[in-house]
Length: 85
Image (cartoon, rainbow, N blue to C red; front, side, top):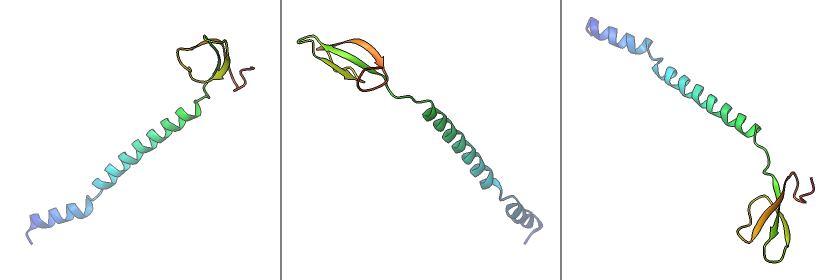
């Protein structure tokens, strides 16, 4: 083997940390993303409840989502499904 060939072989043998650097950056990014998602889920709160009244027969319902055009929202927000608080 030539002297230059030994240097190349030695460099590959000693400098094999390139994969570790890339893997380390990937793990840091993965940890940062996981931390951001965990922080977002901690701040999540349940959706509020609202009372809706029917335009057709004045029937009252309690829902978290708008039931549609035949209803109007007239009270809320509430913290429970009974629309009491």
